[in-house]
Length: 223
Image (cartoon, rainbow, N blue to C red; front, side, top):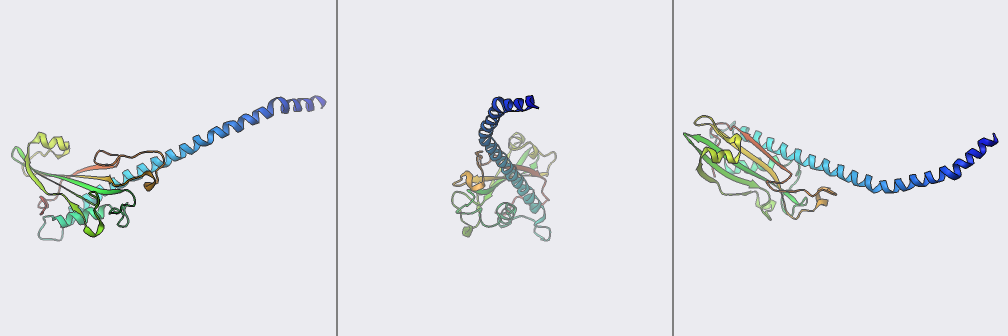
């Protein structure tokens, strides 16, 4: 019994207190590491969420392209149709008019379209953009559209734009839809980010490309 008491006191004096202090020091150093890890995980989830939303926007836009003229005798898509579809496709992130000026999220929504139709050994090619930004565009002004560019391209030029745009028979059509976020006065806090610095634009972190075969008669669009 006596030996047990002395052994217990010896453990307290020689082992227990230093061990307790070591745990406290380790815990103090681990707190910032844990907080940094939590911020890192939170940022990665936000990146995943934004990537998923831009992918969803691309598929929504493609679906609307294929369906918007189903009940019309004139199947050709117009610039007004494109604006309505682009606007609707980004509402999965921008639930209000927050994709327009003054851009409370610090980002806006942009789309690019590349249309091709194989004609003998060449391709009829059309390109245009539609977005909600363009460096200061406001909701009251509506959507921004670039000019419609129409030209002829070779197969190698079309393949350089995207390999899936290459067609295999005359009259075949392809449409490349590119959806991404642009930045206007962006800061990390506007998207709830802590550590990671996202890149925006068509070569940024939040880009999705989708190639579809449009229904006959939809394109080229009426500008």
